[in-house]
Length: 100
Length: 451
Image (cartoon, rainbow over all chains, first blue to last red; front, top):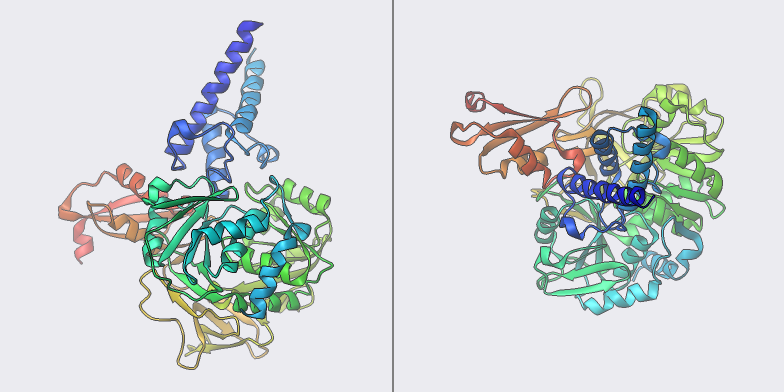
């Protein structure tokens, strides 16, 4: 059980790290990677606009091999790195279950 | 101070009673007013405000204005090179925004105003008058011009729009379009303030189902969208709760889309509008729900009090649309403006080609050279070329529309070099906004350039 929680935490950190890379490499967010906090607002703090969110969703779909639906493309899910990480984790878990 | 400026500034104290967003509570207006006062800029100094859609942005905009400064809203996604270029070309005295890094601007003074950071640039003598407002027009790095409006001209335009679209204190308006553009800022935000109606502000990402939910939960009666969003809603077959009115502007709407929208039982009144930032912005409106089907290919007639004429029409009656409006900007600044876009008899040159029929309906024919609409966003291809030409290996660039709503930039190299196109695209991306980045970058042989 403890191992599972640890793996889960590691996975979340790895997803967060990957999102920071996407924001810097594809959206040219002008922040140092270590200064992008998981709680930073993608809209208010990092300045993403409508096309920025579309690009972020496309990159996330590609990078994680998932398909975020229109219904999931909401300001709530795309509010912060943390909220987006939760959404990605749900998809990844669902993909793993489907493969079993 | 004009009555219009007084009205907008006085409204700030109880703005949170009528205007709300879906984020955290905004700071108090008095706190923001004092924060701007502490910057101690001279009256008429321009303040660039990075502007995510929010009540706090609107309060910052008013607080800067109330201190005698000249607010200039800019997209929150704008990059430092653009802001630095505007700092010089528009004589910006301070830059304000969430998470703004003072080190990027080599700022001498740094302050916190509300939840935003503010940096004061080197001493810049004021270039404007108190209660002027700067609104950026289409462009990119280093060449983005702005219109110098007065609060009075903007309030005048918002008032004309309210009157024509019958917007009153009984309405509840939804703003989903960027508030750094004239439509979201003037038509919707200032329009709501002066009409006394309620305003709900939402921001990206745009989602059709959420749009419907917000309209339902908030009891929205009026909203304004772009043709791109309208087509998206039609394509998805989205069913909205009943709206008193929907207005669409910012690009051409096809007659087929007008018919489709009118067939929706949830839209009672449909307004197709035309405008440009220089005009304050709205110029004409087609109330499609009460006009004959033959007019659906038009942008209606000019607002009452606004005159239009076609400059030197050709055999088909096509020529540049000229507009005389009480809400016209005072002048244009920055972006290598060579001459002001006014005729000797005070008409504004729109740069758009139109036809005007005997009844006064205006029909759009083509947009001014260099301006394209790609992925629903307006962009200036010449400005993209200028960014490419800043690369040390590029002699000349030309950006045009490609297939499937794409953008193509052709490059000619200095000294016949072989260009590293990926590296040049990365270079361009660091200055451009996402919709301005070309989908394809191609190197042309210099022989073609020299022809």
